[in-house]
Image (cartoon, rainbow, N blue to C red; front, side):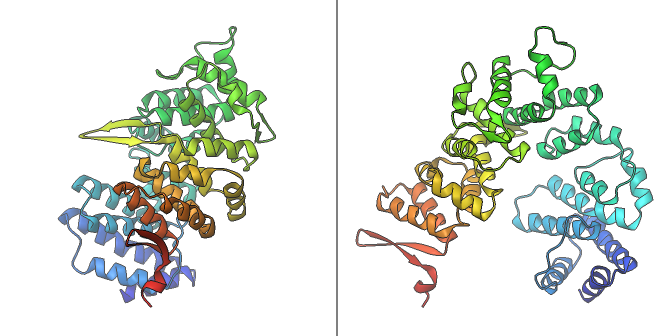
Length: 405
C-alpha cells in the first residue's frame, strides 16, 4: 500500500510521470492476474482500500488516465464484493479498468490496438490523449452493441461533421436501439442538431432516401414535435401552453421526447420547462427491454424528470420546488415509482431538506399503512436525517441524532 501512495503522490503532486506509469503498471499486472486466476490477488483488495483511505478525501478525476483507471478499479472491486455480478460482468469491469492504465503505460501500443478492438471506456481515453481517432472501429462498436450509453453515443455522433455519412450512422444507430425511449432521445437530438433533416423528412418535396425513421416512431409524432420546437421554443424558453402542440401525437412519447430536448439543449429552467418537468414527474409510462433471461422496466418520463431536477443549481432547484407541484406529485406517486426514479428524485429533493421535510410531514399524516409506501416514506426521512416514529397510533418525525442522545 505504501508503494501505491508514494507513487501516486509523486505523480499527482510532483508531476512525476514515470512514477505514475510505474503505479499504472503495478495495478495493471494485479488486475491481469485477477483476470487469469478469476479471483483477486492475495491482499490486493485490502491494499487498495488502504490506498483510497490514505488519499484523505482527494477526489479522483476521470480526466486523468491513472485516476480513470483507479476509479474503474474501485468499481470492479465494489462489483466483486456485491456478489451480484456474473463472471462475465467482472471480466468486463476488470478489462475496462486496465485500459486507461495500458494507455498511460504504452500509448502507441494502445492506439494500435484500438484500430481493431474498441470499448466504451475508449471514448473517455481518447478525450484525454487526443490525437488520431479510430472512427471505423468506434462506429462498428456502437453498431454492434446497443447497450452502450445513449448519451455517450450522441456525443460521439455530434462530434462528426454534418454529412450524409453522419446521418447514415445515426439512422443505423436508431434502428439498432430496441428501447423506445432511447430512440426518442435520438429523435430529440435530431430536432435540436439536425433540423434540416427533419424538415426534409416532413416535406412533400423532400428526399425520402436521406433518412428513414425506425419502426415505432410515427410521423405524426415527429411533425408535432417539429412544430413545437419551431414555434413553441424561443431563445431556449418553452411556452407554458406547450401541450397545445401535442394534437395528433401519442402523449407519453411526445412529452418524453420534449424532456430529452430540454436536456440536450441545456436550456435554463424557464416556467414552461418547469411545467414540463412537473407533468412528467407524475407519469409512470413504462418501457421494457428484454435482455437475455431478464426484463428491465424503465419509467422514462419520471426518471428523466428527476434527472432534469438534478442538473439544476441549488438556487434553480429551490425556485423549481417553490413554484411547481413537483414535491406533491412525487409523494402522490411515491410507491409507484421504480427504484431508479425514486432514488433519482430523492437525491435531488434532499438537497433542500426543509422543503422535503414539510411535504413529508403532510405525507405521514395520511399514512394508510401501505407497506411499500411506508418503506419509501422512511427512506425520505432518512435522506434528511430523520426517522419516522410510530407510538400508540401516533406518527411523528424525529431527528436521528436526538434518538441516539
